[in-house]
Amino acid sequence: MVKPDRHSDDKLIVFDVGGVFIELNVERRRAALEAGGLWSPTAQANAGLLRLNMQFRLGQIGEDDYLARASEIYGLTAEQVAQAETALLEGVFTGMVDYARTLKSSHRVVCLSNTQAIHWRHIIETMLGADLFDACYLSHEMGMEKPGEEIYLAVQHREHVLPEQIVFIDDTLENIETSRRLGWHSIHHLDAATTIAAIDEAIADTPPSGTS
Image 1 (cartoon, rainbow, N blue to C red):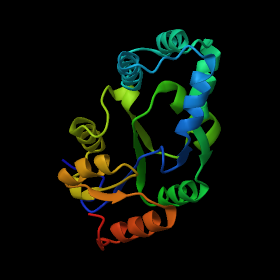
Image 2 (image 1 turned 135 degrees about the vertical axis):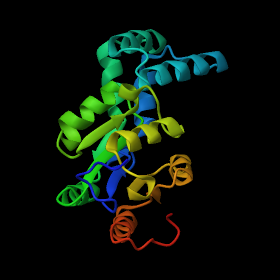
Image 3 (image 1 turned 30 degrees about the horizontal axis):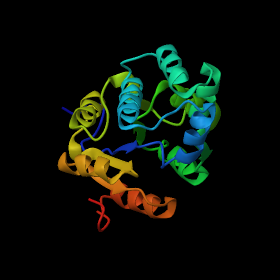
Image 4 (image 1 turned 90 degrees about the vertical axis):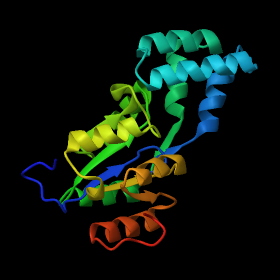
């Protein structure tokens, strides 16, 4: 059901964050984490690390627990691990941020992000600010993540919108494939100019070719 105070043709703009608003540097994070010299990239160690990161990303373990376990794996202090995590977040795509702010004057703008507590705090406190989005749907708070359908459906339910009212932007094709299956107007983000043009067309109810 659509909320009574929202028209059935109102658009909800749903943005991914990493890769869309935030420039990511995976190699810089990796180098900082491995600087302690204890990391041994065996198959068993990789599996354990993937599980640890997933648990933190889904909020199944807290920040202190993650930092303690990661410190042991990498041979770093908890502070060094936290600094290595924020090293992933290299910069801000200001053109996309400025555009999102203009959208808020006439549309509801939210984010849907696979993230974890350290990254998200740094993004909000030092990069984007707390007022860019009308609401934030985050994997570590919701206990689910893209590309699983559950988190998309949770956003749709909480926002009280129909699939055709949603314009979704993400730089990961697998995430876009899920949103398309659910009937969301989906834009695969490659660069700011193309994405902004596609959103403008979607808002005007003129489907851009190759995006939905």
